[in-house]
Structure formats: C-alpha cells, structure tokens
Image 1 (cartoon, rainbow, N blue to C red):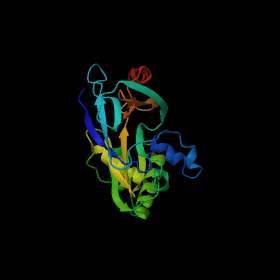
Image 2: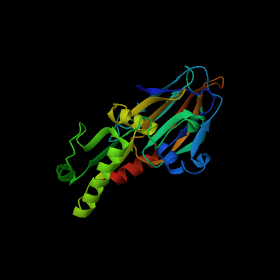
Image 3: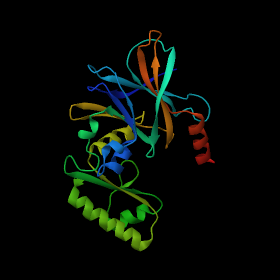
Length: 247
C-alpha cells in the first residue's frame, strides 16, 4: 500500500499524546489533564518521527485514510497491541509530545492578528452589506487584520445576520497555534500540517471520517521492538457512520 508523508513529530519526553485539539479549547480554562488523550511512551527522543498516511484505495471510501502511523523503526510488523482509543469531536487529531499543553496556545493570538470568515446560502448578501471581500477559498470575510478590527467587523456582521435572518456560518479565527496548523492542513493535499510550538514539532491532521472513536495500536517487529504507532481510522464503525451521514 502506498504511503503518503503527512508530516513529523518530535517527542523529547519519550511520550507521544494523540488527541483532538478541539478538546484543548474546551478545557483550556479548566484542568488540561481532563483532555481525553491516548499516551504512548518509550518512543525515540533524539529525532523527528515521520508521520505517514495510507488511504483505503478502493470502494466508496477510497480517498479517505485507512490509517495514519508515526514511524519509529524500519522493520516488518508481526504483531499489534491496542493501547487506547482516540476520541474525536472536531474531525481532527493532533500528535504531540506530552509537554505540548504547556506551550500550545489554542485560542489567543500569537501575532496580534485574527480572521473573520463566513460562508453559506446568504453569505454573498452579507458580504455585500458589510463590504467583506471574497476570499481565495470561495468564502467571504477578512484575514490578517488586527484583533480589535476583526472583533469590530465580525460583531457588526453577526448583528446584521441576526437582524436579517440570513442563513450562513461564521468563524472567528485568532492567530493561535491551532489556527496556524488548520490553515496549512486546509490547503494540504494530505489535509495535514506540521508546525513548531516552542521547541516541539507537532502534527495535526483531519481524520477524513469526521468524528468518532478510533483505536490506537503499537505495531511491533519479531523481536518485540515497536515499529510504529498506528491510528486505525477505517473501521466498521467509522464506515457505518460515514454511510449514515451520506444517506
């Protein structure tokens, strides 16, 4: 099966965390330890670990990921051990060192800028009313503006939307680490991104299956050495959920 390079991750502590970064946003004002995550220890600390994806390649889900792996060693896999379940509620996963929560800025701006983007049935009407330009991705709004300007423009747009009863979706996007990774992933053929967070390198990717519960395995060589950490995205449950969404 053909592998596609999705990025890389560094694990200086030796422990990798696998989690939905949207959960960081949910818990950032509470106990970050409550964020649901799979933790895998005893990994190489001295180098960046490649992240690879393998697509289903056949059938109606051919373009979606079958699985994503963090490569540890180059050896044939002869056994697998399930080590946890990744809980996804925001259609994405983050691979990062266990120290990442101390450095990850999820909702605040790291450069003093933000975006306000909107799309949907009545988006063109709102754009015309508030003077918002069309963006390169087909949406409308403003990018790379000072936070105070984005708040002012976004608030006015939201108030007019409510007043007119227009149907559309809006998104306020402060320039955080989460935003930086999502910007790259949205434009990537692999729907993935690698960014530096302090002295760490982290990898974010979209599951392509949306939300769900995805089993995590450590695949081992004949001598017991761990070859890779595997997130199995194509499962009976994920296929059933996708079929239900598309019915």
